[in-house]
Length: 521
Image (cartoon, rainbow, N blue to C red; front, side):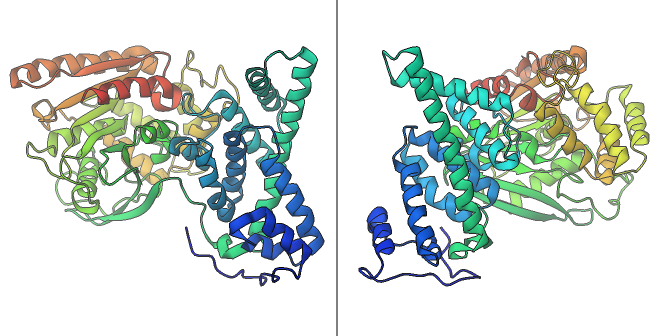
């Protein structure tokens, strides 16, 4: 926890015991904590501090809602409003009421669209999270969100109280709905005051994450000019195994956000990176030496990962459980397995690779398709990337997908993916597209790779099923080689009902397949 500092704007008022009835009442409510920095700010207006003390005491400790739901709603308000002081003083309370690190991660992550993937939060927790999020961001809560919360509250009332009449159930449901609304409204008031007057100097602090999170901008300098790879690490413990995530073209590392809580629940350490030219990762300023003048190739992308794992992160040898990539990231992971997975354990050696929705080489018809997409953009960041997003999202999530734009107009996940595409720098897209337009990891020797375990995975709807069929055939051919080498058999999983990005389209099914695979290693 950061040290408390004086407010930029006001001094705190700390009346001595016995000199202020309001101050004494606050001390009684706070117990051993005494008058806090928040109280000291409020005591500039003692009647307001007195009313605040009464209101917060009632909302915090005299309601009927379970503590986990109450604290989850408070923490979501704190995260959205940037109220670090509020988060810090409520996270440990949330944990005392049963909130886990993976649940708190969902609450803290305010950029990934709601609702979250299923299985981490309860139905009531999810409904409360969505309600507090909507109330905080837009004040007016959509009817569907309110109806869902009231439905889950009714279920909770029935579970907690046996033998009630229907009228009593309705009355109690209304009561706890009002309480939930009051919690959100009250702690929006709290957070806005905390930030406005800079209580304890915390308006200068970012809202903490519920586990160790580090952000890096690693310079990469091999044979080509230096560029930057934006990397995030999430650490559960110093001894936990690592899982590395490699994004697709037209996204950045946030594309994995829906499935990260599953990995956090299993206490993996996590490495997230955005590939060259995507997110905040940059492209080299000039072409590399040699015949291939492209600033992005699949082998170069693999070399970036190797440099980060071997030179920049202090990962114990042999402690990488898996490297996971999708689409362009999947091809990158195959290249990594071909070029860098040494037989002897090193910090960059991985126990497994998970390769999603890709191919071992550029399909014959795809080079011209990539050039057509580059022409569609026409170098225009604003309207060109919007045209590309409008063409790409329906292709990635075709009819049958739960987030297909044709079937679910206004779906938040589809809109989120569209925003990832439109925010991709044109230069990064063009360089990545030309990398995908001509590559072949078979020529790199991927079938001779010593990587111990391999999972190939594809959405059943991707390319009308052709992507999965091709990837499965590749796995069968690779298995023939691995049998001769005495290596474990490659597994293939088709994610039913999913398009090109199963970790966004069907995160629950994606996790089920990946977890089953990792549990066997």
